[in-house]
Length: 133
Image 1: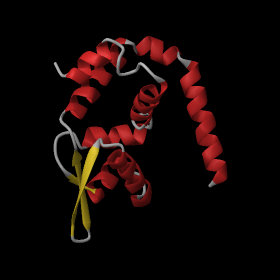
Image 2: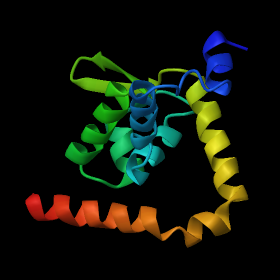
Image 3: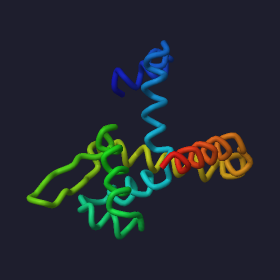
């Protein structure tokens, strides 16, 4: 086990406010369903932006914005080849994280369905950002 994992288990990684904020930001990047779907789509192999657009059903601009967010947060790596851009998962642990999240969500399906705070917060933020656009 890595030193960072040992530290996280003992509470050391999340010991002060700075690390907690970083970890919260790490998970916030996965909080958008479109970004999570894109990340899952990229788990098995590298894909072009065009492939991602076809898969997710959003505009090229929105898809690129989500992919850029995932790249900026370190989840995926972008590679340019002429006018084309290809994305792949940057770290194999991302696949482990996604599979663990799926398993935990399945095990806690009833509790997640009953959780109104997260849905209410997400809906309010989405409505606010839509009005400002």
